[in-house]
Length: 328
Image 1 (tube, rainbow, N blue to C red):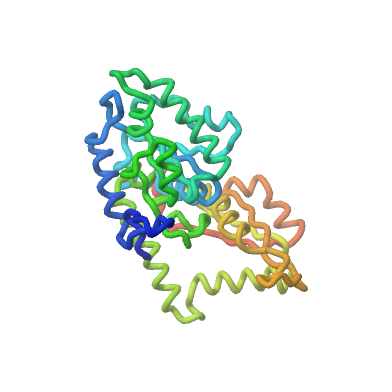
Image 2 (image 1 turned 90 degrees about the vertical axis):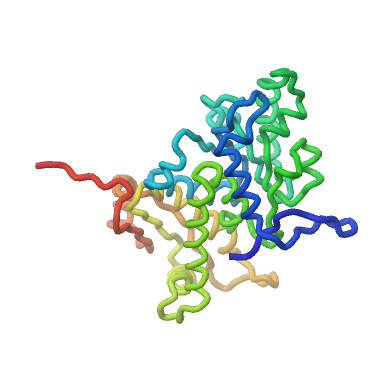
């Protein structure tokens, strides 16, 4: 895995990430929060996390959260904690994200590389107002104290996070070349998921991602999973001109897989021009869609069986996270 910036230093007018692993900082911070040694302004432990982001600052993280939430070791590590996500600027999403939460036990993470994403910053201001209205005056706490104690950020814009009231010690950076759609393995994903599941769980997750990186780098093309999947996609979309691809995970834990891949693939690919601005003479990139099996079988499979041809990727599992046996 590439190193992530641990902190920043100023080089002239530029804020430059130092070349150290941010994982040490995340591991230490998550451990202190989970142990109850980092508390809110009322002295209560911070047991609930709201992660505010959109697009790549949200979809991949929620996908991993859903994938792990019923895995036995991850579920045990998350006992007594809650992780919510806020992306949509519709106030209904704000209400859903904050429903049932106690501001005194809530830590809010604002995820935005530039700290200028309009939707994210609007939601961040809304949740900051919720915290301040609820907690200002508690034990003499000022507005600044509430924000400092109950908010953190994943960003590279220290000036903006400081102006928002977030302490520099609670800002976790990442390299500017990390695109949002690929950022779940950076602080974007590792910070909120470590707070919820614990840092050791996320070390296992990163080790698995690294193993696939090594496979992609070294495996021959005839046995290279990412290469083969990529070639199949080009063949189906550009040569056979199939306009769509169904993503069908037969695991409820992967219920957000299709949404995550939509953003990973469709935000990047399928443009009608080359990088030089030339119009392509063929279609590029499929429309990704899908639902977990067996739900999709009672939704759109009849069109796949009896309507138009749609390439489909089926995902299975060898062992259920919650195996069950019924008697006769």
